[in-house]
Image (cartoon, rainbow, N blue to C red; front, side):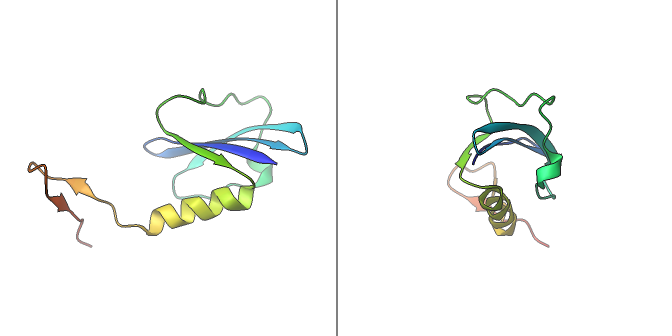
Length: 90
């Protein structure tokens, strides 16, 4: 198994293989998680070396864990000063 992952502004793309058979690609919201039935061989993912490419993962579980971990990290926004980071207030 293997999965490539791309993260854009509000969507996440994944392309996967399962036991050397192409699963196709899936696209979900950045708030969702991937399921095997999300993948379609007819869907064409972004090119591997485009902006937003986040890496290769060994399983769908690893992809979903990465997405969950990414959500739990605070969002850092750059202010007008280069050295300071501004964390959002909730």
